[in-house]
Length: 173
Image (cartoon, rainbow, N blue to C red; front, side, top):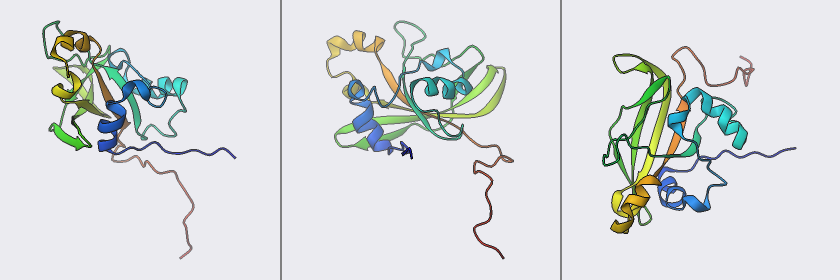
């Protein structure tokens, strides 16, 4: 019988261990360029690298490079061929074992800004604060090209969709 486990780290673990030690955890968390793929395509990509999620409602974790809109800009590119990721929540600070990170909540919209439709795809983007991500200011330009975020992607259930499998009642009345 095959044994499986669910990978569900805390936010503190994501920041202090997985994000900080990216080079050492590449075999656990894949790297996927989110701007090159639509969110509904990610489970298939994930399956090619690791075990496919049992459900589209299950969390998927991956590193994604930060792509900047302009060379000297802090604006991050979050568009795909068919839509864009919009920041929809407050940025939150995560403090963990000597590391400080931040978390942004983003929602995927199909179409372009003026004629877009909100989807059920939600992503949480985790990153280290600048002074920890770039300890040596002289390397800031090199680091900018290799800047990564850790993403947690999931599809929220519709109001009329159950995320639980149909099952027999546990007891009879």
